[in-house]
Image 1: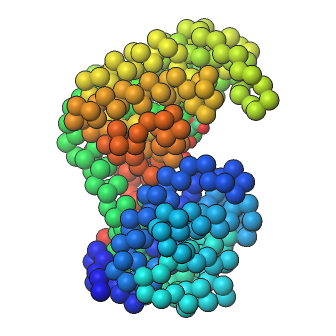
Image 2: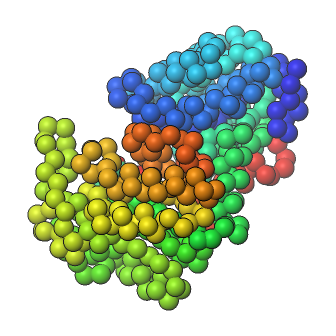
Image 3: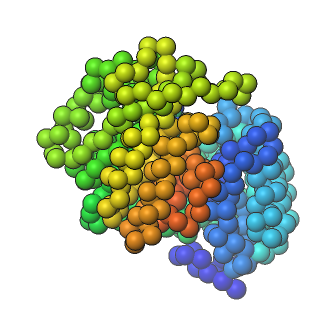
Length: 405
Ligand code: ATP
């Protein structure tokens, strides 16, 4: 009835799909279903081709054992709504419920297995333990499709080991993501501007190393700002700071200068005396970035910086953006992120390539009310896209290119 990307005829076959359904939840309410929607095309294509589709995915970081707070049940329900067909749900991943649920599937039907990280074997560093779990997962299917871009940088059972055990193919989402990232790394149209923000500072500093030889401008926002400011000798008060990265930041500033790369830091900062929390009304103020008071913390780039960053982006032909400029979840600290998002839409509107990478950046774009279509590509994987740009090997991609399964 139908073929799927290199797997040949999939009709009547059980196809295990590794999707990235790691969405933010408030209790059992999905607050942003972007990753589920991004997973639909591959699942639908397989179901339409007559496959018996078995979806495996993780949610959050459970500790290798079942934890109801991280159940995929609400996600399976939402997937069913988006697919417009019933989606069966197995209350375990490889146990009796999974086996029965898969056995009951007819051609074209879809099931979701419970959170794959409820099993310690999924993320184990021990090859044998991971392999044993991958054997169990593989026994549920005849073929494997890797479509969880957010996890392809992880050597995990449902991403890596299972591909060694089954005929495998790259899903449409992963293929698109890799294609876009390749366009960023192989001869990008210039000027090529990279905007980095967010809170996972140490994760992101590595990418700067690689980008210093590739991007024309690097715009720094979010929590990363303060390690750079401290490296320049400024007081950063109670702001996010990675003391052990000060030398790295100094080295980047020096190398950017030597290489003629514009590394922009904000000239003003929106501060408050406390990190925003539910019961407190924010009391934002704006100070020059060299004058952050000792009892304050920086929560967004300031208005002058936002305008300056928008200007720096105006003539870009290629933009990669990862990480919000501030604590965008709170309106008082969202303006910097909004300004950058707006500037990207302008670049897209005149035919430039804009790529938004990272779960929180993608959520920010949607939360702030931008139309996703106004961006060239919204990536579902922050860590994976950064590692690709850093030039690191992505195990979940390499394994798909290997022959032998
Ligand atoms: P992911 O890694 O999940 O794909 P991401 O790469 O888009 O996401 P993160 O590094 O996780 O982004 O950072 C997002 C978070 O950074 C947001 O929740 C935002 O509130 C926070 N943030 C931004 N600026 C600051 C700041 N100055 N201080 C503290 N937190 C900040």
